[in-house]
Length: 424
Ligand code: ASP
Ligand code: MG
Image (tube, rainbow, N blue to C red; front, side):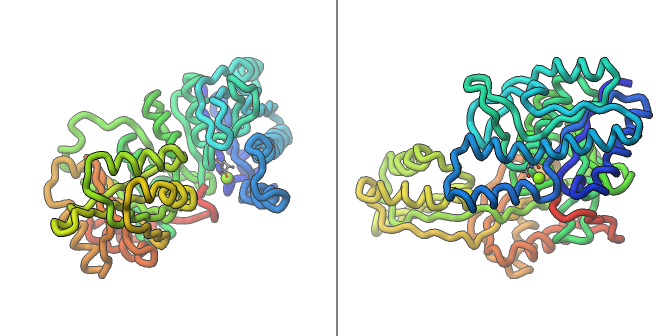
């Protein structure tokens, strides 16, 4: 039957009872004839607790030591899951990311997987064991140090293992029944999607949908690995993430819109009164790049004829806000802009759907739905299959609900159940 890779998130492993429940599920797959490889996250909110602990000890912990600390969370899970499996009469072997052959670059806290050499996993499978791998971690090829992949990274571990082992598909177990047309915590009438393409899922993950780690979707697309997102609290079929089928967008039954995503993690900076000359934008964004600030949306106004000055606004992760403001303050004289405005009370609402390529009027309908909900649009950006707007943070929920309704995405009966708490 071949190898199946499963991932269990923190909310699926929150306590001893949940761990035993997950062990039973893993054993079910083994009994069904699969070779099972499992990637586990840290229990419940324990990664947050470890981070708090670190902060209590040191305001700016060395990145190497922080990774050492955080990887312990996943190691606790892997050992406990293996114990619970052995209690059910099956043998399991747990491996750290490093032991499992997850090779990364050396960027602590945001390492990228560059290779997976799963020799020990394959040997353990050949010996009839169930394999449990600590998620979200690896070992640097250059420095040989232990690394972490960034928050939510266990999804990526699972898909990388699935690709390296030639698994038929990868199952991501979480605390909701799949990918929904909007976050069911905000839109109770959100609908489960049966299938969503890699492209749509990428846009959703990049637009703040927390159901899957962005890099996991990139990885799945690159290796053509089908991903099944489902709940560990039910036996319902979840959502399949697969390549888009040819001609699908034109097919009648294909929904135009896959979903509405939102994101409250960004801030907006406006550089006011920038002289409208060649090279000014480059200077501003070079300064931001030099201080490793990631930029999302950018808007530049036409300059006022009278003054020859323009405003440039952009969004960025709130966590990079201070860094960006000081980088820009450092080039005020050089650029000659007037002042900086910082606003972290913003949210992003995005409408995503491959069908919008071939359907006119989507933008108009989106903006009309926001207008009728009394939501003011501060910035707009689009891709081929996405339209995003920046709005006042206090109006995000309203904007998501209004858009969801306007595009007739509401289910007639509430089908979304939120079983856990964290969304992982
Ligand atoms: N435990 C890590 C986190 O909470 C990784 C993960 O859950 O995927 O971010
Ligand atoms: Mg977690």
